[in-house]
Image (cartoon, rainbow, N blue to C red; front, side, top):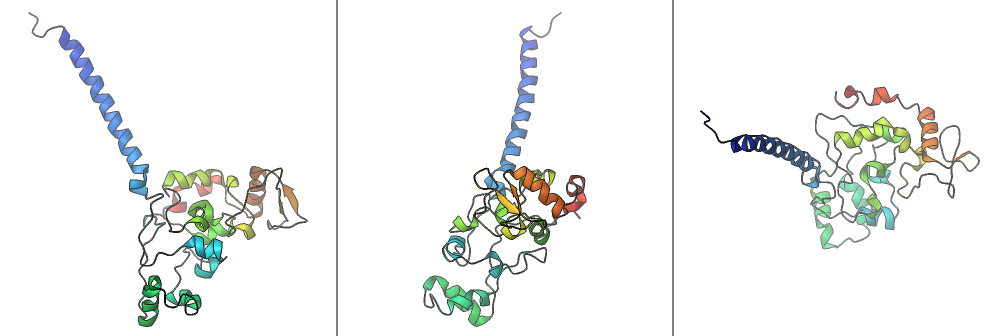
Length: 239
């Protein structure tokens, strides 16, 4: 005796397929959420005690990154400037601006301003600024065009898949060391070749490159960048 109607076969198959597709959709949605600005904060401006404009200080005034981020070439961290660095200028200009009162109060009291980190990696990730800079990775490769940011935000997700894209092929992003802090640096082209000497520094009498990949491979060798196998190894970033 047949207990279930024949249509139950169709319904059961449809239920199984619906369950599979629903699970797949939920997994896809979770992956997209994990990569979205809601989680990574890419493109999201963080509130700060003082609305510091990199656009004004870098592009308009021409202050070099290293004036504020003093340890970026020699240590694992870039460093946050002390209030005294701000007051080197602001004890003479904009001395009564209300917007800078937190800076003046910090200088008077000796209590540091508490800035909110914008580019913040997890504690289980090791990142060394000095290594990247000395190998020819420009600031704006990771931080974006900070000279065009009135308020600072994450340029990229900073997730592992984003980082490892460069580690798999560093030649795509390397530039001469003396151009690392140049926010308006342009990769080589037929119209605008990049000239470098045997030390990998800009030189009007140096070797001309019109292709980024060729320049990058030259700099990989010149700067002794470790093999792709090494820099994509887990313990390079997870120690």
